[in-house]
Length: 393
Image 1: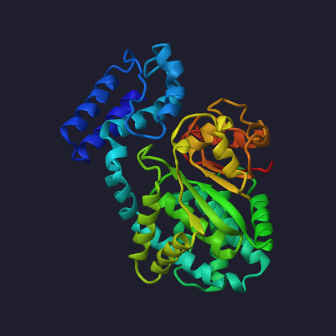
Image 2: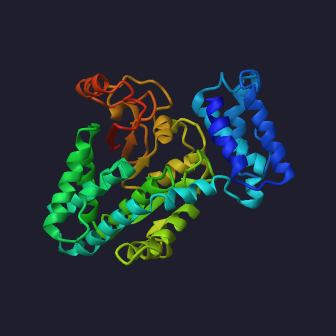
Image 3: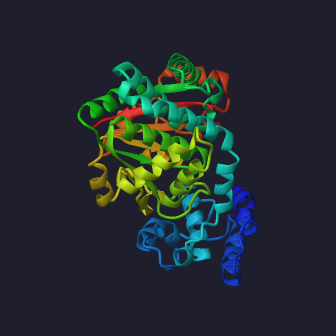
């Protein structure tokens, strides 16, 4: 872990930013710690003006008090702590400069082709919502839920450039079928039933706990657009990080940048970006940034204010492997243990959209585990396999 975050991440922070001498000195001190990670004792986050200082004191107390180092601290805690140390070193709360901005910009510009394909397809769908029957609406909701799961693994070549209804429906079916074999647990039909019921009730608040900027965020915004434009959601709350973390994790500014990027595309795509700006300005999309989402605490230790806020949601879509690990308390549950028994404490209806990138999980059948493990030695970590898991309190 220490070698990866030092050589692959921290080194790029040095290369891609123009820091002042004080910032450089702080980052070099962090780099020196990581060079001898097995003997460098962790310390508390210094008071850098961040509203999360007291929370981090609580998180780190057990490790600081026992003189723990980078290597004998749980991976998830050490990883979040590493990014918070970067935020401290560069004085983020004074200057609000994102040290990962270059990589986020590249995440958009390098994905221009799939972004154009997906947003053009979105533009053939949204204007037709008023003409869709229930089956067409349910199929469309299912497609965009799965698009948010798979992100850039969706085969966009399956989607025709034109808006012809029959070809569009065939493409939807083909796209769903292509991802079906890699799903090890799928409650997507139940999720769609919930969305259709919310639509019939006139629309309800829904949340997306967002993960990465770039094309993955683009897919999340397409889902958020479909939820609002279809009438399933009256409001979509995009739960975003309180500060830059995990390099590509999204902030409110990244949502705005993505909308502006889409607005700059050709006329087959640009109306989507303009509509997203309208959703934001009207309050149909809300963009709160929360420090809780940038911390390693198990989600069963969720602060009361976060719990009470999420209770207002009719559906919470959770994205990202780190969020899923927190949902499971970073514990190695039996892979076949029912999702509802592991996540049953969550305060709102929950749909976890996860591609497997860590050696833990739950809610998968023995047959699914056997199918994946017998065909892919790295099935738990390579992101090729996914789950759509639902729990309702």
